[in-house]
Image 1 (cartoon, rainbow, N blue to C red):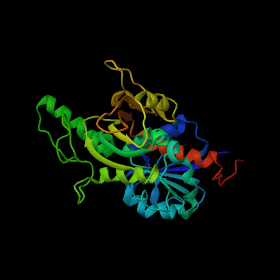
Image 2 (cartoon, helix red, strand yellow; image 1 turned 180 degrees about the vertical axis):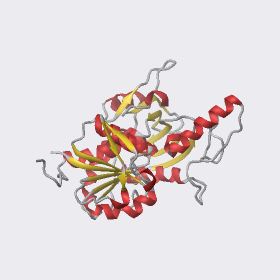
Image 3 (cartoon, rainbow, N blue to C red; image 1 turned 60 degrees about the horizontal axis):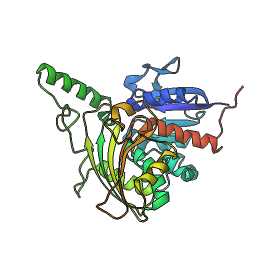
Image 4 (cartoon, rainbow, N blue to C red; image 1 turned 60 degrees about the vertical axis):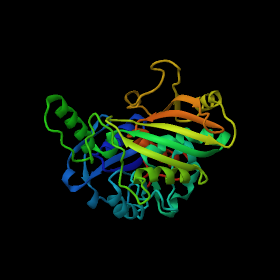
Length: 344
């Protein structure tokens, strides 16, 4: 018995990953319908060994569709998610539009799958920010064991988090540097090639950026509202995968060895932590992988009960597409939804 799945934003970075991962995981589909804006109608996308043509989001009838995986931006989601949900089609949204709505579950399946039960209030489920998703996967088992008081995180986020235009800009600027052409910045406020930009999203009144605020607010909603978190988010000249340097202060004692052993047994986590050159994971190696990789686990002696570690994950997969599909799998595995159209 298969489910009819629509993908809104099918031609974008995350949309293409959604199609690939649905095929890779043998998701129980009866039909997959790629949707896009008017300028992309008829554009072809790949799903397994099939080629599908994009249809227009504005004219598509969702009445016989079971799940809509949305990755079309906040403004599109604000307009369309309630309309789609009203057709009894569950929306799993990748934008920030619904994450902070108290009636919309914000889900990372390895962390808070049980919170999904409230999805029928709006028929919408929110996917977290990419940098938050990998962080809470790493923090959850540690929090369960030793109770987190405070987190200080610095992120090193790849350009793919800002979309295809951002990836194109890094490529074009890198080439321009090598051939001594003028370096043009359009997508980013400063040059990204061979550089770092300590700004992701807009600045807020308190001096933090919106990206940093998202990490604070989402970690509280997903994991525990008592956790104090401060973040500095930096864009780096890497195409795919976000990296994070994380310092955690706990209520209870926890050693690096205890944390290492615990994380090795935790869902969604792979520990690569050898104290030797190359005994850790870099963003290049994490690209295309599903896991959240943890390296360089060590005790932070500047605080009582402190740990520090390095965390890397493919932001297009666990940070977006994979997490959305895992949410859909939770709905199906827990029998929270059934296909509208019975198999013939």
